[in-house]
Picture 1 (cartoon, rainbow, N blue to C red):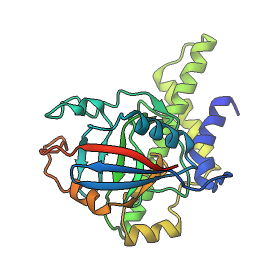
Picture 2 (picture 1 turned 45 degrees about the vertical axis):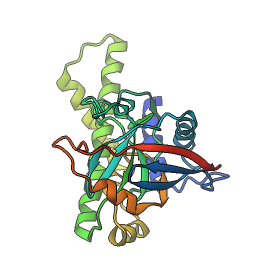
Picture 3 (picture 1 turned 120 degrees about the vertical axis):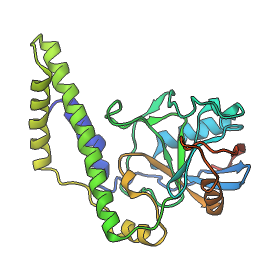
Picture 4 (picture 1 turned 90 degrees about the horizontal axis):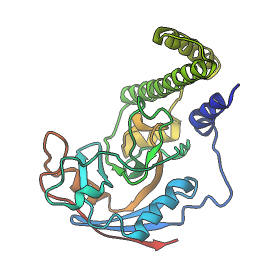
Length: 271
């Protein structure tokens, strides 16, 4: 197995199928976010250290102060983190995701329940490693789901994983052929990538939502279709009602709020 396949396996499945506990995994860092519609208290997970440290760095620098929630979808999530939203009205270029990126930190125990704090990212077609945006984050509102909806979510998760894997295999085959100086058509690249996909998934089962998480989705709600493909790195401990208020604001056809919802102040209150 070459280095690329090792990285793929590690990225998509090792932390999905195992608990991946590490020493010192207590969630200690707490951030208070004051918005124009109320206060939100966030606890960051120590078991996603890259995302935790990056978020704390941005909070300490004051990066998020004055930034607006530029993408709001009721019953789904609220998103912020684009510096162009400091202007009024919100610039049409908001949600560009033109920032540095962070390696994904998928962990089986962290999922998209209501109140989950997660990192936005570009799509699988241009971002097969599912790296997170360095500054954009979202907080889940979601909905309560039934068993049929959870089954559909599982199918979506596995579809996203397969798409990302196929994109990765396609790049690998193409890069290998170019380095070897061997001419290869797009059709041949896709055929070889498909064979790799078949071989891999023949011995690696798909993702299944754990029973304890299913119970949460059926009682509290969330957005399970994003699990294990977007990094969850914290959760709301106080202020779920504020999430509901922000999610309920009127938006335009591009999901941008018609009335500005701004982060007024954000600070670390516990490390």
